[in-house]
Image (cartoon, rainbow, N blue to C red; front, top):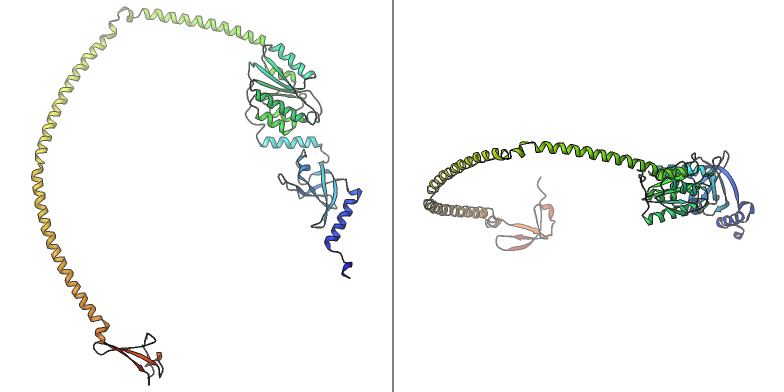
Length: 446
């Protein structure tokens, strides 16, 4: 009879196979609202999808979740693609999501806003920007080798500042591999290490076309670059994450070229102006110095040079006189001090002091001997008194007067309750002891 009953495990496995073999449950397109979502970093994601009348458990494994271009949030409506399965341990059915995107908002725009929030929170947009060199020697251009963008940049730079060396790094700027290509080109420029400026450029297009410039890896490569970067991606109205992270954003590739180099003709005019100002300033400086020279030549220093040291000679005589007087006073003071010290030294003759200290030592020695004799006599008296007192308190002296004490089993008997008739007890005397038997006992007196 027991063979007709299924185990819970057997039933659950049977239902799971039904789910897995049902062709309608292998690929499900589902819409719903995210519930019980808690982002688990670098792990599988567990949450629920619900509508107004029902809810289903959902799981999204780590590889699929890492491909999302937005961050799911509690209450967000989404479109998901997945398969229905049964989790044996709990017996609950669930949807395993393979793809998910926001419902009602473009996934790319959502992902763009999420990426902007993340990078802004990390400080990539607000970090100090590097200054673009005014007179670059070498400029790297990261863009597609074909198209109007590279031609506009080359034409503009050649027209404005033809002495600069322009190096084009051919790079994919559209498609799934474009982000890696852009990062690779930036790193190649950094490895060279001898460029003054980098221009990253691309023409206009849709958000899908410009998406490689919104990738996190591209933003971090631009942020970590040591060479100043000018970003010009899309039209003037387009703003990518690369534009926000770069040191300078240009509205168009032509504007990027103009920002990267000065106008050589204007610089030559500035050089001529500076040259004229330098000549005029130098002439004015020479004129001022000539006037100072004439003034110095007409001064008394050159006409009567002896006046320069007359004051110093007089001051030298005065200081010499003061020095002689000071030396005489100092010598006299030292002589007086010497006499005083000699008198003090005689007064402190050590012979008399040693004799006095010797007498004091003999007196102290006699006093010490007297005190020791008195102390020893006093201690001897105290010792004899203590011995006599101890002898008075000795129990042997009391027993010598006829007293004794009784013990039972090695314990002193203090009252009659400790023994019974016929008990054997030991009687201890001043000299010797003997054994006795209890014949009769009186009750303990109250």
